[in-house]
Length: 245
Ligand SMILES: NC(=O)C1=CN([C@@H]2O[C@H](COP(=O)(O)OP(=O)(O)OC[C@H]3O[C@@H](n4cnc5c(N)ncnc54)[C@H](OP(=O)(O)O)[C@@H]3O)[C@@H](O)[C@H]2O)C=CC1
Ligand SMILES: O=C(O)[C@@H]1CCC=N1
Image (cartoon, rainbow, N blue to C red):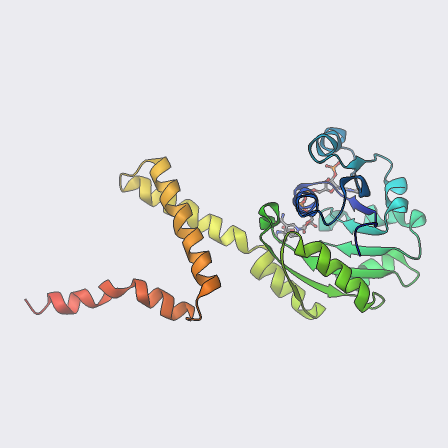
């Protein structure tokens, strides 16, 4: 379904690159059918072309006009100026996909005009390794078939959950920002490990495998998170036993 479609990324930063990498490695879209454009960073476009063999285009209007699917991947604060700058080069048959945090489909539909088909998504940075937890939701004019197309796109970079749009802000806090909570905790664990005498390398190896193990366990067990942490906390009983002596 997506094989012959041209996909334009308006915004070529870290989230765009993560998705591009997944689409190519999973062979969901051929590199020559991907076009990336940005505001002014020509070096980044050159890097993307060299790394992924995709097309790049510094003329944003041309890039947008050529895309069957146009993915908005600029920062939310730049959405208005970004869409206004390309609005006149859009086509009525295009599907617009947003990865922008906090921007409702209604806002994007209004900027685009003409009852544009918009699907809003919330991926996370684990898309870089094909392990994003992405939620998607359609706007007022996108069809169920278009929603399915977007599901297929993001399935290349992880799991996809279809939700109603009123849940997407919660998803942004939960899964879009989710990796940051864990990285922050891991930073503290690394410091604590080194304070306790482990080398940086030892700490890193042990913590990484611990996190991988937790992820695998969660994917394979039917136990609740409470049951899982209780399993680990057997020593909680020790003070009682110790007090017997
Ligand atoms: N980072 C994350 O964890 C997640 C981010 N997102 C969403 O992804 C989006 C992109 O984030 P991220 O990739 O981290 O951001 P980056 O800052 O890495 O990339 C932003 C890109 O937008 C381009 N840009 C800026 N202004 C315009 C414009 N007027 N027209 C076209 N392109 C423009 C920039 O181009 P130039 O460099 O030339 O200025 C750059 O390529 C955000 O909306 C964010 O909410 C969603 C989920 C997770
Ligand atoms: O800061 C942002 O825009 C994104 C949204 C989810 C995580 N970070």
